[in-house]
Amino acid sequence: MKARLLLLVSVCLALHETEAIACTPPPPLTVEFERNSALLQADALSSMNPALRELRLFGPKCASFHIYAYDETETSRGLTDARANEIKKTLINFGAKPELIKTFIERSTARRQIELYNYGASGHLHCDPASKNPAYKDGADCQRPYTRCYVQLEDGTICNYDNVPDPNPVRYSVTP
Image 1 (cartoon, rainbow, N blue to C red):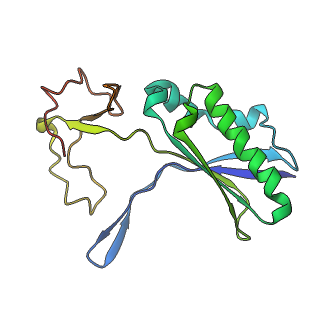
Image 2: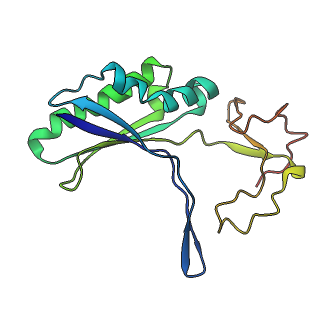
């Protein structure tokens, strides 16, 4: 019997008048641990590939993660903590910065899982004024106001999540 570990990416839920409109999140990644084990097997590690790919693609400064681990009882706390630490260690081995990984252990009888959220990096957003999105309506429909943007960190590092050509503040002058 394998225990399940759930990796989720960000979800967008916006309210429009009285009805909620949900953005379609990417499907969750499931990583399995062997029963009573905190070791990541090869198949479990391969299921983390989307998060690891983004880490390699955008670089360690442009990736921050939150790991939420849930346990059922106080006695399972050690195993839950070890599994969360195994995920953290794996992210660090693939280049993530330890200071950009936060781990939370919570007790829950409803779920026994670990969730991993990739939040990217927070910094100064620069957008191309020519990329104004005509479909944008105050975020109510989960649309972004501009379609070509990049994030610049305080140290000058460029996090080019949208793969914009030639990210520079002259062309990308809008800072929403």
